[in-house]
Length: 130
Image (cartoon, rainbow, N blue to C red):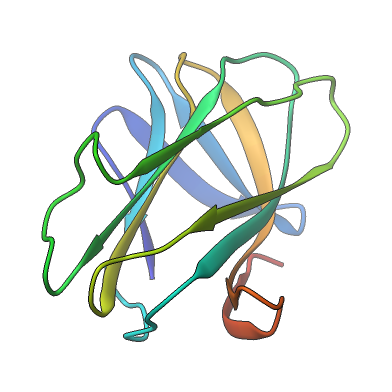
């Protein structure tokens, strides 16, 4: 499943995954993903009151490690309300890792769920945090 990275801690609280980063980015990764291929989407619901933009990374059996060439930067809205995010990506080979830097600044935030989907929106794998 999802694991916190570096300066980030996480706990399930009030029906969500509560993440806090005391320094640096608010980060987590998951290497327990199905070997999906082709055009994919990562979708998630997040809320927070402060923070910076986010970055999503992926790795595959042909392109290991999370690097700048395999990432999607996204704008975040931190106003205390839930917001849905939907990011498209296409791994080379079979997907074997996901990393979500939910904020590029230290902050506290909540994740309701994360979904890995095919390009047409069909859910391939889901992680509810309730």
